[in-house]
Length: 445
Ligand SMILES: Cc1cc2nc3c(=O)[nH]c(=O)nc-3n(C[C@H](O)[C@H](O)[C@H](O)COP(=O)(O)OP(=O)(O)OC[C@H]3O[C@@H](n4cnc5c(N)ncnc54)[C@H](O)[C@@H]3O)c2cc1C
Image 1 (tube, rainbow, N blue to C red):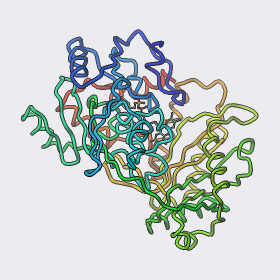
Image 2 (cartoon, protein in one colour):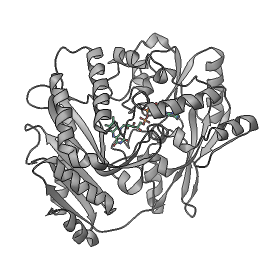
Image 3 (cartoon, helix red, strand yellow):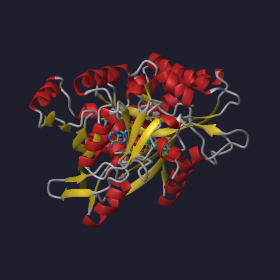
Image 4 (cartoon, rainbow, N blue to C red):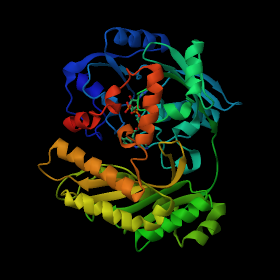
């Protein structure tokens, strides 16, 4: 294994130009005590610490920037510790991914219901740190909704247990201060490794649901109409088990898709309710599977000319914004075009759920975006475009990157993380919250 394999993100990440000499050690602990020893060693030598799971995070956070740092990987922390079917939880180490947990649970008729597309590589520690979820967050919630509590090692080696109520710690002074600050699991969710290293997690599990599902395809002449359908589904809490919108697909790869459209799967008994909201065309199981396959392969293909890439990757449309979906998309597209990018694909989960930086649950459409890469652009230019898109999102009331949130694009979350770090120390992933973060990330594109 080479050091670059440990440090850079998965191949979907755009951050790969790192100064490897700044990495002072890569550790693979097996338990909480080993993590404590490593963190204390890093602290006493003045090195910052970057936690790393599967490396599939797209925000650049798992690289650690270019600080003199140690990396701690959770990939040797893959034990299942306890399971209670009756009480509906499983205690695990953070390096397991959802597929591995479900491989263990399936024979028992139980399931862990968090399923990002990266569920075969993303670890549960990493998923909580980005508050990820799949195209079923609408039904099953994000990772924070499915986590009961975590154990976390802080930069000075102290261990805290954080749940939805607050914090417990052997150090009663620290416990009191963190509880006065109101720290809960909401703060650990989407903290991008800036608070501490998660060493154990208690996760919600539930019996496997058995139901008969049917498929449908709703097609629209423009996206505002699609947005209205999503609003109706959200208001009626429609039991959509799979909802994928495609608003743009390049002609070379779209096959017989004619966007905008919505691929749906829902319980048979709800056929009439869904028909009441939108006039969908029924899909048999084979046709539904084919549609899902075209959708999942879209971002993996290239047009005949040029190469597609993920510059920004995610837009969260919610509330009234869904009624102006087409108008907002037109504005975003115009910005991208002005930077030399041609549209390749926009597709994503709807209805869906995510949290805003102030922990408000939000419901809407998470749209992923792919463009055809322009030639000759520098990393700095690319990152500046990303920052302009963040500004555009703020202007339009769209959540930037709802799945892979970047702390530096969310001032509310950033302020909160700063507040907590003043109590617990600032040695974990400091580059992410520093004013130089954009320059550091720009130099790595
Ligand atoms: C092909 C692909 C598909 C994807 N699909 C989805 C999707 O459908 N939904 C979605 O939400 N995301 C998706 N993602 C994004 C990605 O999978 C998530 O961000 C994931 O949650 C990161 O998990 P990880 O283990 O790879 O973490 P990493 O990338 O290793 O790290 C992510 C962050 O978590 C921190 N971290 C990791 N482990 C710990 C720990 N033990 N303690 C404290 N902090 C820690 C890191 O410091 C970093 O800040 C996708 C990514 C790819 C490449």
